[in-house]
Amino acid sequence: MNYRQIECFRAVMHTGSMTLAAAQLHTSQPNVSRAIALLQRETQLKLFERVGLRVVPTPEAQALLKEVDRVYVGLQSIGAAADRIRTLGVEGLRIAVSPSISISPVPRILQVFRGMRPRVPVVVHTADSTTICKWVSSGYYELGLVGYVALPQEVDTELVYSERAVCIVPRGHRLGRKRKVGPSDLAGESFISFASPDVMRAAIDKVFDPEVRRLEIETSLATAACAMVTLGLGVSIVDPAMLSELALTGVHALEFEPAIHFNCHVVRAPQQPAQALVADFLEAVRIAVGGAENTARKSNKVSRSPG
Image (cartoon, rainbow, N blue to C red; front, side, top):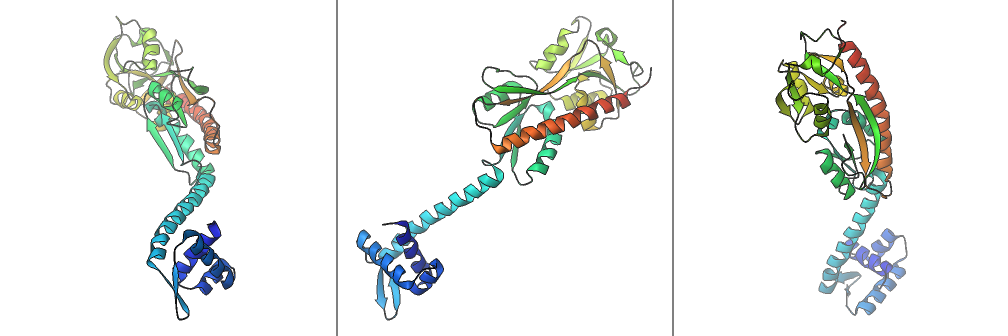
């Protein structure tokens, strides 16, 4: 049996007429009759009986139709999947991002990407950088945005963002009129830190004397640290992009010396063919990150008080 015979059989079953089936298939009635006769011969099933001028399907034909329709539904699903892949990519885009990067610059990246691919579904999952690198290397996510690369030998990486950290203090704080501060300036201040084992926690800890700094509050979320500083609970060191994204008005942002940098790396599984969606997302990253860096610098300048 062949596809044409099955197609004719299904058309006759759904129209109830070989003439209507022929019209539906843009062929002649004798061609449909011939295909049905060949199908009956090859399957050794009596599929139709003549009742006057009508053809009436047999119980065998009704049973066969269930299997034929099941196959046709599968073929239609394949066609729909092909259309979806062509339009949206392979089931949309799955990305994993570290929590601070989910605040900035991910929203801006998605805004740019939406302009490029307005109908593409995007799944954004947050986790720590080490976990994200493992997920991406295993192929569970197409790509990740992380603050540091935990497994450089297992993922391809690209540094797309690096911004010098700032110290934030509450409005009206004694240090608010300074332009630049260092570890000694924060002696005696309640310090709000990222929770261990965050890589930025290690970088910040390295510049402080643990005997002098008052480490009183720890949090895994940069947004929480910013909110706590706004409420006067202490001081902290953060990515300046956070300030513009959160539109914080209750803090002063001060230069911090020595320099500490917050980075954003794109990580991808090595030797994987690039989807068109992934390529577009990476382009959106480069566009959005350039704008975010400029906005952060402007915000940082405005938020400082002269002194």
